[in-house]
Structure formats: structure tokens, C-alpha cells
Image (cartoon, rainbow, N blue to C red):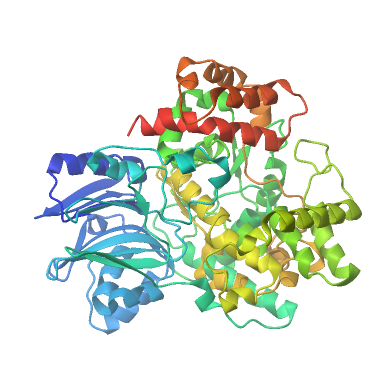
Length: 619
């Protein structure tokens, strides 16, 4: 896990290359390297996870120096691939997956990507053929940006700030930065918040030389749907097997591993799977030092789930490290957090940055987390309520409605449901569907790249929505976010739910397997319940890892927000309407009944100013 930089067809001096590489020092605090030859530059910042010796340093060469690699990510099944390559006569001097990537490319060229189980973004320069091979993992877990210059030059980087020193000017992409409605809809495209920078697409590779860059897709989930058993019980068994294996592969590490534990289903299932594997699996590559659970605590707010997280760690007999998220202690760091984050989003990065910073301070450098389950298996109420379209009869409708109703807390807080009855939810949903049809003439979830594809069209309504959520909107955005949150402190997140075998499985089972018995994500619950506290496995209330923005705006950060909206720089910002934004912020600060949605909207409206001050003007 690291940060990478590369330039071809453009000569840059060593000092400029060093500047670009060191702008991502936070991604790789354990080492750095720059390789240059003619008009090619490759740079790397290292976060040492596998083979901590000098043998794992990059840029890394192979085949007597013909191939030069910079690599960000992990290939979890590198041991099995290396054994296969050894049988073919390949030699290895390191115990790293990076060297396996090089040998795999030498043997299979782009076909090597199909063999990898992992997350990655890498560049391989072939000195003999003078061509650059570029690839990004199936789902874009690892970031990769690029910009093209007149004359054929191309620059690549793990973050935008890495390549901006090479650009003549920086112009905000106003269509993204100023429109909160696009916040979760641009990460799945090649558009970025800075004009002239593009996002290399997930599931793709390219060959680049003096004639340009030719991008090809190597992965499409629709090409990899699988046959699943008809029986729900058999599906549960199959998922359990896949998930445990995905966790086992991700426990391969030469440094301490842990979990960011929320107390919700997904992260709890992950750490309980790790505990089960540590007791029962003899794989010698699996790190047994896994008992490090980090819990973000929000005392006195609706977002606090620490009591549930403690139930999990008590069940496993391990300690919990509670990280109390006090925004007052992060006031001086907010500007840096936004700079490191680079993009725009709906909520403050403070809790996440502080949590992964705590892991780094404790030298827990790898965390195996539960990201991806909501988008793949139906964890969000605004997604799975649409299963009502395919529900036939009262029993099936009640299954969906119960999952919906029980997902909300019953405490009267700002995230509680106001009209909590089956009939009110059902009729409100029907009214909304009628309005949507009148307004747009069709369901908005069909306005996707896969529309018209027979395999997509055969999916039930919920799976169509989850496919979009997983591949084009919410999940790509969250994968980006958590890469930034963790790598800001040099911590690697591994995500077993993002194993490509599980993604294919999730998109191949029907909605009834995801809402079985009136539980959201039911197949995860039923598969992992034997290894978890029952009250956590079947806990329906969903809070999620969010910022308690209303409580903060009305309390510890009231002065911070007030100072911003009365500042001259805010009033002069042309990326927003200062009066309108100030009104939204004041409405939350002054209204004891303000909802979480209002707080989120106020933050989103203010964010263009924060982004301009802390990103655009610092690049």
C-alpha cells in the first residue's frame, strides 16, 4: 500500500519529480524512490506491509531491469500465484506481492489481471518496448488519476495533488464542486473536481506510448454473474465459505492488523470472522495478531454505537480502543483534513480522519473493515424499499416494510422515523413512485451505463438499484473516501466484502435472499450468526459511521461555523451563494429540532468554500 507517480513522453527534472512524490508522503511514510530515464519518470512512496526489508522497495525492477514497477495496493493471493510462477521457472528475491505483479505481467501480460484477487493501481514501464502498462483494480478500491499534455505527455498519480505541480493552471470543475446533487455521482465517471485531470477507470488497463494511451476494460460484473443454489440455506452456506476465505486472504500481513469496529453488522461480522479463522485455520501466512478493535465514540449524540461495539469485543474476549471523537480537538486540523481529502462530500471528514489516525499512533497499520456490504446486499433503506416493486402479496410486502421500519431508531432523535407504520410507509412510497413517473417518465435507476444490457434488465428492481449503487454512485464514492481517510495517516484498509467473488455472488442472488425474514442484509446475518453475538447479528437498527453534524453545529463547532459565514473570504467566494448558504447554516445552528438531513445539507452547501480555501488555493 503506497502512493505512485509516473510521467511518460515528458522530461521533468529531479527536483520537480521529488516535489510531486513527496506530496503524498502521508501515503507512504516508510520510504521513497524516484527512477528516471530519458523522458520517463516513476516515483513511489512506500507503506511497508509485506516484506519489510529493502527487497520490497520501489520503483522495483525485474528481468534484468527490463521492467520497472510502481505499485499501490495488495494482491492477496500472491502466494498461490508465486508458486505457479515458480513452477514455470521464475525466480524471486523478495517476499512481496510487488515482485509477483512484475513476474505475472512478464508471463501473461494483461491477462495477469484476471488472476489477481486484490486492490491495485500500478504502472509498469517496459524499457525494451518503450511502452507503459497501466491498471486499476476491478472496483476502483485504489485511486489513480492522470492528465495529458500537449505533445503526448501523460502524468499519473495516486492523488490529484501529486500531478498538479506539472499543470500550467488549476481550474475548478464547477459542475461538480458547486452542485451537491452530484456529490455521489461523479466518482464513477472520469470527471474530477479539477479540470484537466481525469480518473483512470476501475476494472481497466491501458498501454501508453508515444502514440497515446489505449484504455480497455478487463472486468465487468455483468460478465461474471454466477450460478447460485435455489435454496436460501445453500446460498447462506456458499456466502459463508466465500466470506471466510476473503477474510483469510486479507489477514496476510507482516505488520499488525486490526478492525475499525462500529458495532453494526458489517464490521462486527468481519472481526468475528477473523477471530474464528485465527482459531480454526492453519494457514501460516495469516497474521495472528488481529485483536485490535478501534471504535469511534460520539458520547451524548445519536451517532454513538460504542455500546454495541463493546458487546462484540466482550464476546470475543479482546479489548476495545475507544477513540472519542471530540471536534474541538480537531479544529486546528480541519483545514489539513480537507486538503488531504481533496474531493467534495456530504459530511465532515473529522471522525474518520481521527479514527484512522489513532490506528497509526498505535502502530496498527492494516485494518480489515466491512465496507461494501450495504451497497451489495441492501443495507440502505432508501435502496431496499424499492423491493416493494417486486413484492407479491402481503407477506412479501411486509417482509420489505419490516426491514425498512426496524432500521430506524425508536428514540425520537433526529434520525428517527416520524410515521412508523407499515401503511404510512407503503402509501408514501406509492405516492413517491407516481410523482417520479410523472416527473421523469421512467425510473431514475434505469439511467445507467448498463441500461439495455439483457443481463442487467433481467435483474429484479432491488438488484438493479444495488448494481448502480455499487458500480456508479455510492460505493465508488465511499471507496474513494476511505482510501483518503486512512491513507492520510498511512493506514491500509482491506475490504473482504469487495472480494470480486463476493461482488459477483451478491449481484447473482435475488432480493428475497437479501431481505429474508424482514431483515436487511439477511444472508450476511444468517451466515455469520454462528460466530457473533446474536443481538448484534440480528440487530436491525442502522446508524452508520457518520458525523453528528447537527449536535456539532449547535454545540462545539458553533463558533467555527459562525466565524466562517461572517468572514470576508466566505462572502467573496464565487463557488456559492453566500447569503443562501449562511441562511442554511444559521437554520441548523438556531433550530433545536433540526434534522440530520438539514445538517448534511448545510455542510454540503458550505463545502465549496472550504474546498476552495483548503484544496484549490494550496495546490
